[in-house]
Length: 344
Image (cartoon, rainbow, N blue to C red; front, side, top):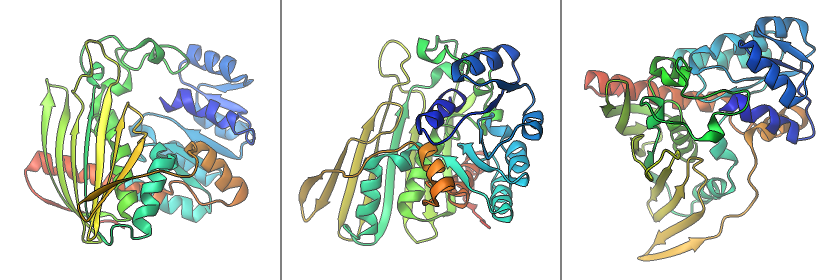
């Protein structure tokens, strides 16, 4: 989806110009050039990096093809905005972290939740000690992603534009091995990054159970993890829950953070995970907390980081934690064992 949404979001900042675009499909490339009003187009991203005058690139390739173009761009001294998940293997994620550090370039990973003003408010409450030291984070995410592995019509909004039909035969999102395992490593990585960001920690031990929907992918996952800071994390993820008779990318979820002096809860509905309300439970009382601040798209944050030196909305070394968590969860589900996670 990033290949459709990100270039327009970049243009909307008014501070960056899209000067070139690369698509392997010539027809989709021509459509992208038309819709983005871009004259330079390439069917090979390598040629684009060689011939175009660039300051930065957006890498929106399939998950299993993130590493090569990102490394090449960093080695040419370009800043990179990389779609989530960062990679499908933790070793590759840390390779990109090191490459960005060597090149002294900005590498931002596209996790939208970090720019949501409600989640930012939750983060500030935790950082300010509103519920004391964090001890546990629980999360449930239910969504309807069945179209990716069943013969179901995709909503019209996802069949138009230069991104193409997301569930057309051969599309990489219908191939779990290209996604890193399925929807838990795709849309589920948004939730994983959110929880690790709120906790400001990395997974150290992970155990998981998983079920398949048909014969295609692991679609239902229950995960328990111990984090480096001593707190616990639990996730229930189900990609097969329908919100109605027709596919609508229905989604809902809840995140609850438990501390020594209370709990913070935020719910969401819809596929975007944009929480609407915050509730704090303390001393037997539940209080609604009004979020403050304004939401921003991570592409806008990327531009501000490059041009103004603003904080990176999602630096690579933090996004790599979600890759480690996903990888460990799949290994645990496959082997039936608790996985010891080793970071950098």
